[in-house]
Length: 460
Ligand code: PHE
Image (cartoon, rainbow, N blue to C red):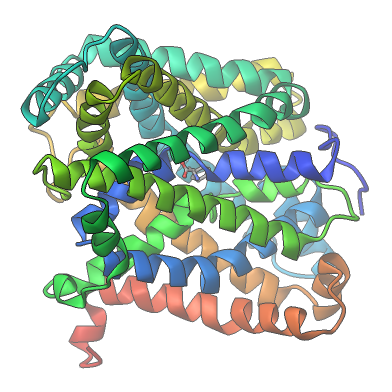
């Protein structure tokens, strides 16, 4: 069993925590969580989300880190090595391949949204938000997403930033960046929450986010629960190998369970803070919480336009949002780049450019779906929305099921005991129960339920 990865290792355990949180904390928390919660009525969604993080997310995160650290390669080759070690079918490598496809799809739209954030840095700094109301904020947003050329420029810049860091290697480029940026983002988010608490409808937001009203699930409960679960996978970066490959750079002496709990807690905290920063502004300005993917881009600018120093705060906020997206995007590209280096002997630079270019091309389809191709829909969704839905709600959970089954059933008990190093105690037994029974069945049921199958067989 390899002791280190050929791609390098995190210099310290803290570096792993920062990098894994950097992967987890991103647009998923600040852009996606509030709009998904808004689409499904708030509190009930948040509750289901929190349950999913605890009962499914943390056990699967532990499994991913465990597999990665044991295999010490790209997810595809890690699965190859582990299946050989455990005497299992090589077809389990499909976990790695599926992860690559998923990463491509996610990053292609992720980069477009990160491009919105980039564009907003300059708008905020130039004072474009000063004194605007909800209507003006909506117009600023609409004029950006309606402009394909502009979106292309920002998407290109963002992908170039991602390729740049990945080509330098994770340990040297990324490690240094996350050390300062993650805490800074956190502080700024707290400032935003304090502002929202003083100037917005804070009580309304608390009520909206934390008082579960299952009435709002009526009629689309299956879909709402699937979305909450999908959000948990997306936000924690689970089910496609990102956390697995970060685990492959983690030293043998680190506690997988403790690190997983820390990363998942930070991720959840940031999502909740984002909700508390956004919904008070939404309610105070009479905006609709279910206005979809544009939500934060149509609400936060109003707050920045009103608050003292908002020009600076606004610019800073979007800068940090870009950084959060950056540290996540890197983890989406890394599994494929590592595989290209391992299997095709590409240099890291060549591998990063090739992978980045492919994603960039796919991203063009996503950004065109917002304007020129807006008439083209599949299942009623444009390409960007479709990729978003397909990856978070289907591909990541499916990857998660496979990872759970492999870690819980196909891997020898002795192997997971050895890698998790928890002893035979309660924590290990709880993990094993969650990963063998709870996670796979829950994810499967939620997916089947959303397809309406439980209704068909009379279980719902
Ligand atoms: N977790 C990231 C976010 O919340 C997105 C992501 C998904 C990153 C899957 C890696 C893998 O923004």
